[in-house]
Picture 1 (cartoon, rainbow, N blue to C red):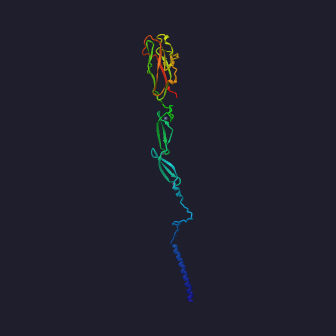
Picture 2 (spheres, rainbow, N blue to C red; picture 1 turned 45 degrees about the horizontal axis):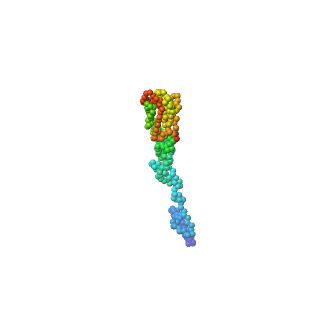
Length: 289
Ligand SMILES: [Zn+2]
Ligand SMILES: [Zn+2]
Ligand SMILES: [Zn+2]
């Protein structure tokens, strides 16, 4: 009987011990943090593809873009009179680079700044600005600057003889100066456009064609021929306007127009010396184109 009693006891004790051991094992396990070893996501081992495998190369997307940046110039900074710095921004990855290059100059129109010079602006996108100054020039000779249109102030300088001496001998022979000339010192071609002649000191202008042989002595008449333009019609104010032929009165720059002249003079009973008998008025201007 005792055995039978003990057996259950023994069994119970074993069962309790078993339970206890289970309990303690559980308690032990819960008291330690055990981090499970993580499995590698992929094998480091190179995989040798067989000949039948299709090899697919997978490269992260970002690296494709970086192999060639897509740069756009975003700003410029002038460095000096010839160069600027360009800031380049990659529109894909945001990379920034700077490069140095020469200015790309755009020119403004020429603007006159004086009677002799014009100026234009040279500007670059970087903000660099400089000015170029040059002389006006007039290759087509229209007195306007070919570049800026400025009306050029031409130096007009024409010298006309102060006197055209006339000497008359006792026998009525007239002598004139051989070296009379109109000198054009201007930069452009000039032309004598008008000449008129007035009698002075009691002298009357008469037609050059007048026959003086029949005129009274001391009647103080004079007719003039100047480069084939002669006194013809005489106005009431004792003035003759010469009829000029244009091409004969054009004078190129830095050259001169010789003046040949002759006079018909009425006879005098006394010698005349140093007397102004005529006044000649010359109108000279730029020659037409
Ligand atoms: Zn990039
Ligand atoms: Zn620049
Ligand atoms: Zn100009």
